[in-house]
Length: 194
Image 1 (cartoon, rainbow, N blue to C red):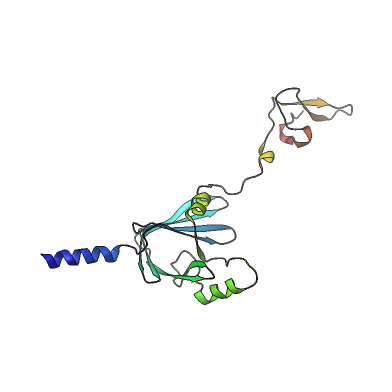
Image 2 (cartoon, rainbow, N blue to C red):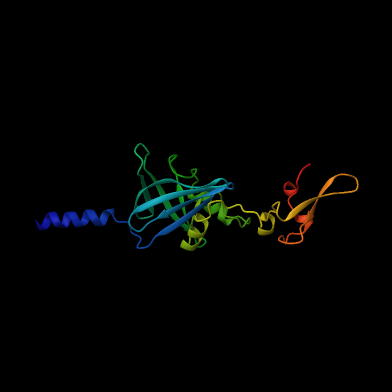
């Protein structure tokens, strides 16, 4: 009885991740970014963000043994893969060798070489550890490409009125009340067409 209890405890401990807090990684691939959230309960999610939106691309469970983190996807038929955690120049990152991984295979030596280069930019297609604040801020933005506030304002037909010039063409004139946008900044589509 005692022996089976010890075996059960050992199995439970072996399946629990070594980290006592959630961890976050970000991979920038120029036209978007992918984020890995390693939860302390052993689950993970991979979130993709591109110019058209954001979505969870994969989820499952993870296990850590030394510097190796094994990802076990929930979806049946998807193979498991392992990422190697490494640190260089105060940067912690994950590298993957398998094709099934969420990023293209790049060796740890290649990442170190790119970090040592004088470009100053982080290498693309590599998951670097980020803070929880960065993760939450960037994954809450559903459409990250916004226009400036002053460019988003639009005039409606209530705040502009068509005026016929002496030559007979129509132009937009600002109404006396309602709109604070100068006529030079008004949207051309707000003008009433003849």
